[in-house]
Amino acid sequence: MATLRRLREVPRHLLVCEKSNFGHDKSRHRHLVETHYHNYRVSLLIPECGILSKELKEVVMKTGPYYFVKDLPLHELITHEFINTFVKKGSCYALTYNTNIDEDNTVALLPNGKLILSLDKDTYEETGLQGRPSQYSGRKVMKFMGRGGFICTPQVALFGVSPGAEESVMMSHFSDYGIQERQPDVVLGMVAELRCPVLRSGQLGGEPGAACGARELLDWLGAVFSHTELNNEPNNFISTYCCPQPSTVVAKAYLCTITGFILPEKIHLLLEQLRHYFDEPKLASWVTLSVQGFADSPVSWRENEHSFGKGGEHLYNFVIFSNQDYWLQMAVGADDDCPP
Image 1: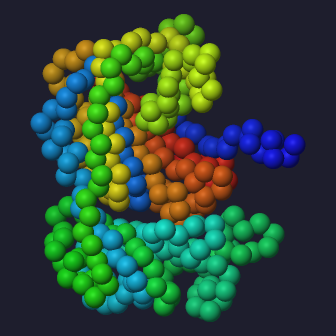
Image 2 (image 1 turned 135 degrees about the vertical axis):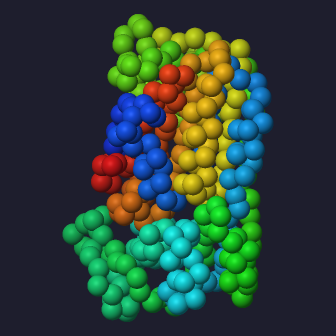
Image 3 (image 1 turned 180 degrees about the vertical axis):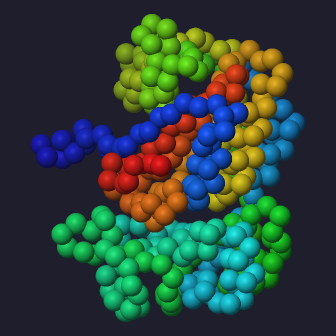
């Protein structure tokens, strides 16, 4: 019975929804994108679209490269050469790869030059660093958060260099550690006869019988990007979920998914392109851009500590309307700090 109860439990999360306009002086859209550092998937949904414009496709296909470095002693990240070449220019992001944030030593380099360490108790005590117990440790402290330091444990790391930086320098700098240049995986496709929620930019919470709200939309987007059947047929034993009401059927919708190590600067370029999507009249009145962070990153936004918990989620979604209004939805696990 206990197992059944656990299976029925849905992981809780914190969701913040807000509405603004790209033209407002106090719009937070750029800041929220720039301070969500470690992103592994970006998804676009464009209703009433069968093919991407040349300009948007060009930005989509140029979201790389990033770099995969094997057996990297992390003290390499605090050498004078590395700091002078990358850190002082504010151009470098890094994250240990294939580690479990709740169990393993995990490290993240932020573009402001801070090195965030999430360490197990033994490693923390060996290094002699000053830090604090992780807020997820519970009564028995097993994890610590700190900054800077010297760790000799070999790691596998992902690196990204901001546009405009000399990307070839990254290859030569880590040539002794089996560095590989990689491109994000891009999947483009079209869905025919997609039932979409009816949205009105001024009604963030929705209106019964007239428009769906931001929370309902986010659930629906998750189902669409997961390619879940949404017809709620009685013989479908996998999912009984269906599109929230009111809804309308669009003849076609374009889906794009980018997976890799994707920098905030590249995401901002995508957002700017989507803002200009409505410069010419379109049948659709809205499009979406969804971003998921690495589940095992030690931070979510800025320096907010992150834990995997039950799902590891830290994500955000923009709904861009034709009048330049937008909705912004930000979600993290229930144990994380509230999104900014």
